[in-house]
Length: 241
Image 1 (cartoon, rainbow, N blue to C red):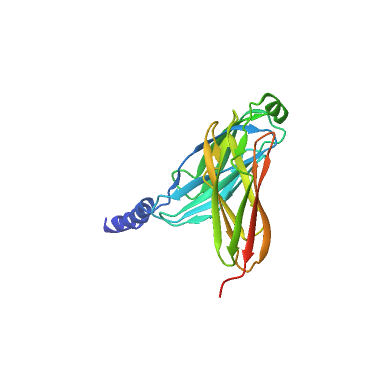
Image 2 (cartoon, one colour):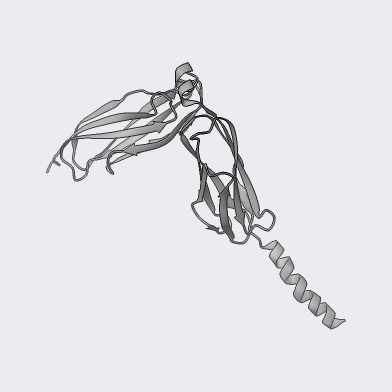
């Protein structure tokens, strides 16, 4: 009897400990709606995931339900309490109408080894959207700004407001600056009809001199003006001794 008890103990205890110490994959938002997407646009979204368990979470694979979707996690291994993001990109080229796609995360979570994420949207014809005005419309408060005379080494900044004056959901897919001395940060990448946002722009004048012109370009799903540029001017003066 004693031998049987010992054998049971040696088997049951490790199993019990394994059950008590396990990873647990949690996603902040399992479903995302892109709203209206103009055909041809590439839209993206980041799903926030967290290990709510007591053991390391190991992501073995992330796959999508179609070739039009790309998904990539920022980290594959998460310690207990650690967070990361899985970025999903959807290419709407040659697709029209309601869309429902899935992304699957495979991990060592014993309770949910294959977690399914969902995103939806409605792809509208780009020519029809532009013609009937049903698509989003990006309006930027100003297309240029002159910082004037600035002493070399200083960082100057400004905020410019923008608005969605269209009838569809506006998605800003990307923001690009013409040089590394300029940084741009959006308050929001998605705006419903009538909503407004801001873009904060910083220009670093370190190791530069004279008159400079730099640009910040917003790429959106506005069917008429998908690329809109803000031009910056500055005259950098030598530092005062």
